[in-house]
Each structure stands twice: as structure tokens, then as C-alpha cells.
Image (tube, rainbow, N blue to C red; front, top):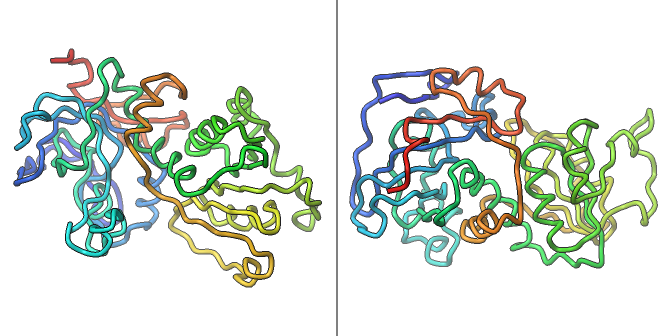
Amino acid sequence: MKAIVFDGEKAVYRTDVAMPERREGHSLIKVIMADICSTDKEILKGYRPDFRGIMGHEFVGRVIESDREDLIGKTVVGELNEGCGKCLYCRTGREKHCLSRAVIGMTIDGCFAEYMVLSDHLLHIVPEGLKPELAIFTEPLAAALEIVKQVKIDPSLNAAVIGDGRLSYMIAQVLSLSGTDLTVIGRHPEKLKMFEPFAKTALLENYKTEGGFRQLSAEECFEYVVDAAGNESGIETAMKLVRRMGTIILKSTYAGRTAIDMSYFAVNEVTLTGSRCGPFEPALKLLKEGRVSFPPVELYELNDFEKAFASSAFKAGFCFSGCCLPDP
């Protein structure tokens, strides 16, 4: 089959990849659509140095074979992390933190291929009428929803999102549903315009001087700050923008490292919350009800992966032969 494979140094398009073998408790899925995530690009920079295999983790597919009859023929999306099912983390509802977990597109083969295999319990049936081009946003939208699952957002207080990219766009829409006074802070005026229907916007340079950040008053700072910058500068920016006794939610994942003064968090009693994958069912519900919206996905054939990875579109991805198949 056709697939995009990471060989440890670069992504390679191949047409000779063996079909995945379905095992008990897993389903064989024909991929309909797959999207490129910033994490996929970070893998090319060394984010997962030990990974070798088929890339990708955001997908919509159709179940071809399964032990569960209720899944066969259904359009599905799927979670990333398959735990061992036996350890403390798995037994206490924290499967995504299982020490021996398999992660599609990062430790095991992912979805940038014509077919994939995934554990049945990680699959979610796409509601009837929700098109693949919208359902494809389920995984990143679920990651945005994880924030409000982890942190109780007081709508009478203000919040800021650092970054004007794709993940920030989803996070901002989720936070705006809470009614909080929301500001999105970015570097690109043209990107920030997209946020104006549901948030205030500000350029990062407005908070800086030649020597760095200017001194901000408590009124200028934010009770909640989400770092979705996607690079090493995000956490440092968040530390400048959050109020004392406020909360920083860290969403950025990247291949680099950063050095920060950890005593800052103790002295200022700032809470730092890491945030990763989130709940799929609420994400599907928001998409089905049209309570969030996104620009169209720019789709490519799999062999045009280099153009897809280089695309400046809001979201780029791959459309397989199943894209235009009618619902069964």
C-alpha cells in the first residue's frame, strides 16, 4: 500500500508498504482523510528520535474489519494512545500516560497510509451528517477541550492564548464558549484577523520594548494564559503575561528545550498545568452542532506530501480514494 514513512531522518513516500495485520480487539480501517499536525512537522526536526514508521495521527476512516459488528462500515475517528490496560495509569483512567503505551504516528504506524489498525476502544463513530472535512478536526479540538476539563475557567476573569496558529484557533474558540474575556496574542496581523469574531487580539510586540518585555500592571496581565506558541519562547512569554497566583496552561510541544527559572512559580504562586490529548465525544458534539468552525482543509495526494508539509494553509492533509465514497 501507499504510505508516508519516517526513516529516522526524513519523510519518504512509498508504494510497497505491507498491509497492516488486524489482531484481536483491533479494527482494520480504510483511511478516508488524514491531516498534518504541527507535531508531525516536529518529528521531522527530531521530536521523536527513536520513531521509525508511518507518520500521522489525525484521521477519518471507515472500519473494514473488526470483532465488533457495530463498528463495521462505520466512519470513525480515533484516539492516539493505546495503553497496556493493566498498569496503574490504565486502571485509573489515565491510559494516555501508560509507561508502555503505543502512540500512532509517534511510536507505532500511523494514518498517513491507505489502511491502518487501531484498538477498538480508541475509535469513535462520527455522527451521521458530519462530513469528513469537519470530523478531521476532532483530535485537535479534543486537545483544546482538555484545557477546560483540567482547569476550571472562571468566566468573570480574563484569559489569553499565546500564538495565532491552528491549535490556538481551536483553543480560542473553546475558551470563548465559557464567556471569559479572551485575548489572543500573536505575531501576525493577518492571522489574528481570523480570531476577531470570538476574541480580542493583540500583537506580541505591544508588550515588548527593545530590552524585552515592558513591566506590566496586574490589570494588563491575565488570570489564565495558554501557551500554544509551538516554540521555546512561549513559556517565557506566558510567565510575563500571567498574574501572580494565576495559571499557565502549557500546550506547546516541540523538539527543542528551554531553560526557565523554576523559583518564579513558587515565589509568584503560579500554577503550571501541562495539557495534551482530550475527550473526543464532546469534540464531535461541538462539530456536529456547528458551535465551532474552521477554514477548509487544503488536500493533497499522498505522493505530494512535500507540498502538503510546506503548505501555509490553515490545515493541510491527504485525501484518499475513500474521500468521495457515499455513506454505506
